Length: 488
Image (cartoon, rainbow, N blue to C red; front, top):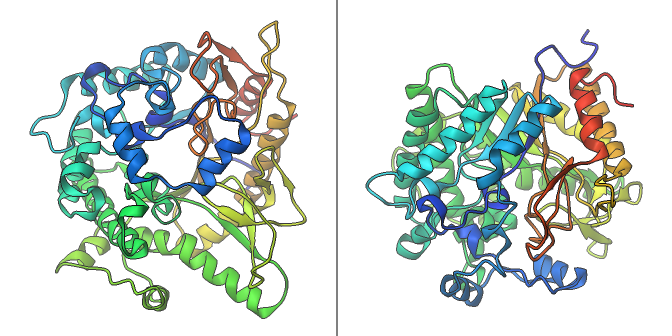
């Protein structure tokens, strides 16, 4: 029986290009869909959360953002300026002993408009330099090929993922990545959090809800095109880079029945199918699951397929599965159940769990449950691609940040990962989110911090930009050095 993490377990950290890079128009970069998301830095917490959870991306917001090329109200255009500071940041990762770095590649840096005939040489050079910097320290690379952001011109000219043409543009992009970075990247991920399209349409499938007569139909048609793009990318990767590892990812919404009522048990089963398994079933098994037929009929969804689509899905199954895990929820037929916040969604609250400052329920055991469920269902190697605590951190005058709460969070989740490994789960790595403070994806603020490295910037992008090691930096360094054995 296994006693803990195997030798060679990949401890690391994750960021995304849109939340970290900045360099909005530097190096020939085109405008990305994530560059258009708006935040007024004068908003208080309540206003920020109201925008995040209650106001979907609108046509008015879209058109205004296209006119406004400033960075003041668009945090993703600033990020943490990783674009210009990657060498010093990667040096900090190396100091920590990181084994792997998960980051995304910005499509609009490689093809500024998405449909360009030739890739942008400056963009290609940037990622090669950044990846080579990682390799200099012996850090492996987990490259996300698309982390929500596509070139905005693809939306303007073709309707984004509503068009099958976008599949071809994505494959052209993927081919360039495999050609240029096949010698540097250790793990490939075609899409971040595949199920985001249903819960955050602008992020996941670049849809503006107020433009759609039947949003459900539009979302699932876009998802079909993404499934095809992913499957074709997997097949292309296997063809061009024999032996390479390319996987799939969802935002995992772990759920329990709220009570032992049969109705709640059935609701938990269906919530799991519709929010989680649908996506991983297609990526891992290569076909649409039968249980979705009833769902599609209920919501009048008709997926438009072309001859050969089913074969593409069958031939493009992934080598491993990964997921983000931040919280769990309960499933119930009771419409009046108390709600709380969660990644991408508002969730039914579990009265047995504590919540974070932002209302996300903290459930380490749920991570063990998830790992066992996914491995039992698919038998594929698993990777925890995101997990972490977003909260307020205070930078002390002496440059320290005392974040014992983050250490407690990481410790409790890593302990449960270890138990899952002892259970028999094949777990290959863990990249905590975000290893360095970045713009938080949901609220678009800097004050919701995840990193073990503090970045001195506020919600308006003001500050020195200096990096500081938090207490959790030293704790995670010790965890990595002991391969997860020293968690004190």
